[in-house]
Amino acid sequence: MKNKRLAAAMAAVQMYIRTEEEAAVVAMQNQAADAAAKSLASAPVGQMNLWGLSGRQAIMNANAMIRQRMLK
Image (cartoon, rainbow, N blue to C red; front, side, top):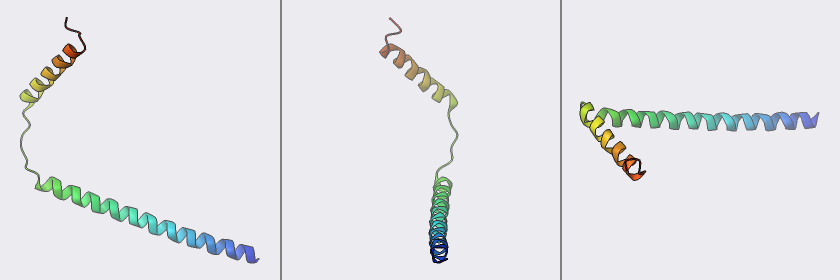
């Protein structure tokens, strides 16, 4: 009977510790999400230049092919 009480007490303490750790993790995730939302809100909003982006991508692909000696 004494062993059952000891096991129950240890299980209760372990469960309490686990729930406190989970609560701390959730609080940290919420804090990180709030910080990310604030940084996104303060970031300047602009339009992406798709033509310029595709041109830079084409140049990088050409350079990669030259480095790999595909265009010889």
